Length: 148
Image (cartoon, rainbow, N blue to C red; front, side, top):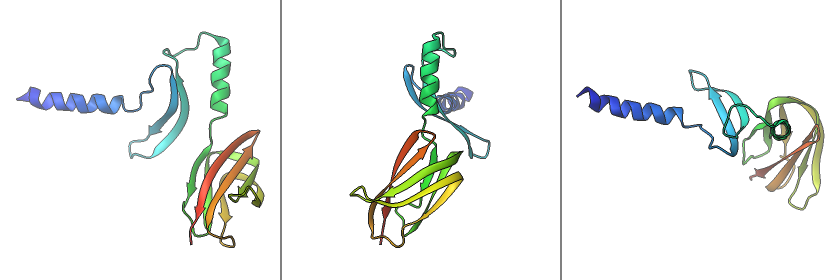
């Protein structure tokens, strides 16, 4: 009788432990959560099969790849009726943010700093818009839909 209970518990525990395991030779996001289920950390991680990087050139490449990791945490609400917000996982400093229409015309251009920026498309027609964020030479592109 106890083995009938232990086997499903063991299987459930092993699934939870390996849920965020990144396969060897690939890269991905690794999320860390606190006891309440709130995300407290998000990292870009490359699993090269070991915990240390023996080749210094590979270490530099991995460091450069993680430095270019997208810092946008959320763009909401999407679709929007006008106002929308962009939150960043790390504070940005003096970034250039452009809002472009589908034809590539810049409809808004601002310089921004901090972890949360607010935009307003209320005076523009409904449709698809693109957000281009240039921070420290890293360009991040996002899409937002302006609904009626």
